[in-house]
Amino acid sequence: MNKISIIIPILNEAKTIGKLLQHLLDNSSKDNISDIIVVDGGSTDGSMEIVNAFVTSSDSDLSESYREEDPETSSGWTCHNIKFMTSPKGRAKQMNFGAKDASGDILYFLHADSFPPKDFDYNIIRQVKKGSVAGCFRMKFDSTHPVLKISQWFTRYNFKICRGGDQSLFIVKKIFYSLDGYNETFGVYEDCQLINRIYDNYSFTIINDYVTTSARRYAENGTWKLQYHFAVIHLKKWLGASAEELHRYYKQHIV
Image 1 (cartoon, rainbow, N blue to C red):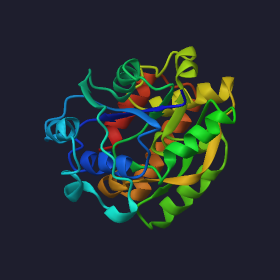
Image 2 (image 1 turned 180 degrees about the horizontal axis):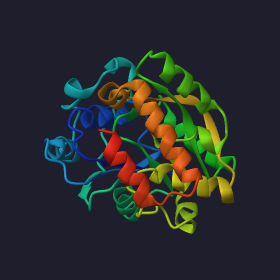
Image 3 (image 1 turned 90 degrees about the vertical axis):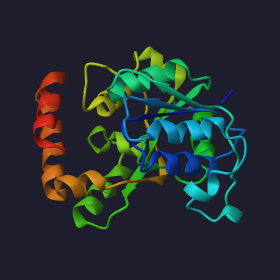
Image 4 (image 1 turned 135 degrees about the vertical axis):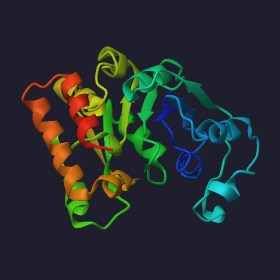
């Protein structure tokens, strides 16, 4: 098949989810996307209404509100298979829940504030046809802060330590299930925990293009402070910390 199911976990993402859905439609081909699945963990900010507007839309009426690119240069197709569902809160739980309903043979996990490049679908399918079973894009922030510029520079290297969920993740569905999906005991670090298992069992591909992700958490927490706490979480996991310990540390130090 070589079709992609895009899975987006959300929790109170009214500010970004509409823009992301329109961005996906404007920068991909309907021939490559099997479905777009948004899995909500209990939003209270109107996210559900925004997604449902896309689910029920049959034309381009939403484009004026959410499109950021020039309509003349965008594909602008309307996906008739955008799905909205709810699951228990927790990114790992939400992504596993969405994967169960995916009809594509390639799963593409994407954060609600991460925007993939134009023709991301062609790039993913091209890599799968070459034999890649999992991978991601490089990443850049929507910020020029020097700490973030240094951090994003490392995403070009194919090492575990350089990976993170903000870079998105594509994985062949049968490989995802051979690894038992996301470990739902992890309230944080769930992306890296799965990616580490992919590295341990299969080859991992870095696509030479960029996902652009929001630096909003750095703005909320302080860039140096948040970078420090993320480093501590990685170090704690390397030293053998449990999923519960990592989540407790995250809740204590990060907004």
